[in-house]
Image 1 (tube, rainbow, N blue to C red):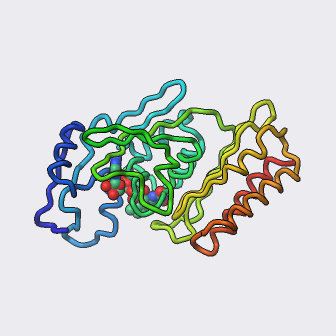
Image 2 (image 1 turned 180 degrees about the vertical axis):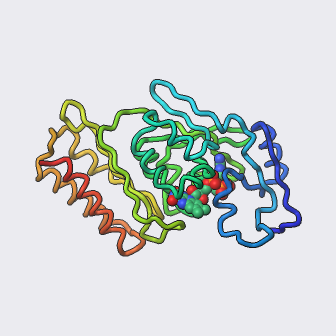
Image 3 (image 1 turned 45 degrees about the vertical axis):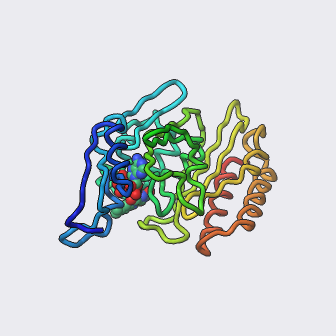
Length: 279
Ligand SMILES: Cc1cc2nc3c(=O)[nH]c(=O)nc-3n(C[C@H](O)[C@H](O)[C@H](O)COP(=O)(O)OP(=O)(O)OC[C@H]3O[C@@H](n4cnc5c(N)ncnc54)[C@H](O)[C@@H]3O)c2cc1C
């Protein structure tokens, strides 16, 4: 970091961006800047030596909707997504409303929230639960990665060097029940912080799909327990609900979880969600 020799590039097309990135492989994408400028109280900012400002890349600001998908460019601000209203799956909107303050939501981009190198943030759990996919681009290649593969933790993001997140594609399926729970209001969150989402699809009083995902310092999803209740009539028989909770208890006891409170908080969340669907 050398404040006197910073270079900031403002590419207006992806070929321009990748040409600068090839010349300066250490360059860092700059989206809303909330993370890159965090805790910088000094007069002179400490920034990466080479910065790729993403602001002028029109295609990263695009939002499109088809019958089956909502596609959001990586530079779309959190507040813009919230303003889309009912087009956005409820679980995602709930999680985005939990991000910082309205002022910060006007600054933070969905791409920056997803690509934060230190931990999975509020948008992560619903994007995994909704089976979202991310478009990643390098100078030579475009690839699509599922949110769950992108966000696998512990470990780094599935971003390669000089690779940019450009688009987020979210399936527009109906989830009749969605609940997002944030476990800490602080940022950066402590070890037991993070967010969990519970979603249920119900057709003619039958539970046809169920998702429960946690994201924080780790990402947790137990596909095994999700399937056991599919096809059951609502309200759920209490024994089925208890069985689901027990499966989660076993799952949680088998994984290493940071923060001594997190296991208990997660279990309480799972139990209260599933009991709310039972008689
Ligand atoms: C005061 C404060 C409160 C916060 N509260 C919350 C909260 O409640 N919930 C929450 O979820 N988050 C919260 N955050 C965190 C915020 O969501 C992250 O800091 C997020 O990374 C910022 O997004 P940004 O658009 O400003 O990205 P930037 O700061 O510009 O970038 C963040 C990182 O992502 C990389 N990046 C950005 N865009 C791309 C892209 N398209 N492709 C590849 N890499 C990219 C950058 O290189 C950088 O490493 C808070 C942050 C602050 C400062």
